[in-house]
Length: 61
Image (cartoon, rainbow, N blue to C red; front, side):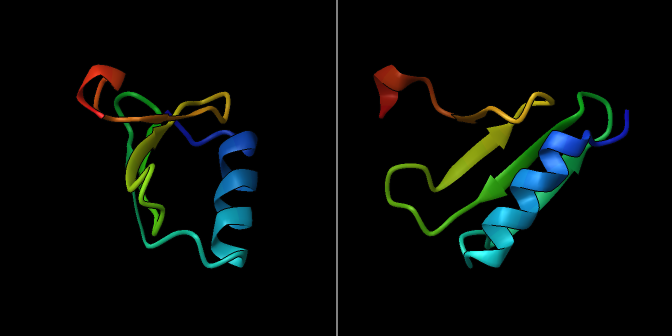
């Protein structure tokens, strides 16, 4: 799978605002894994539609 335009737009915005520390793209699932300086969302995944969700379930946060 190729990254979507929505994903690229969000990645570029996060990078421009210096909110993107690391990123990894999983070609099998089409999901970006990102690391941010946010204490509330330090590691997250970005779905193909651009939604960003925490990796841990909410019950563990």
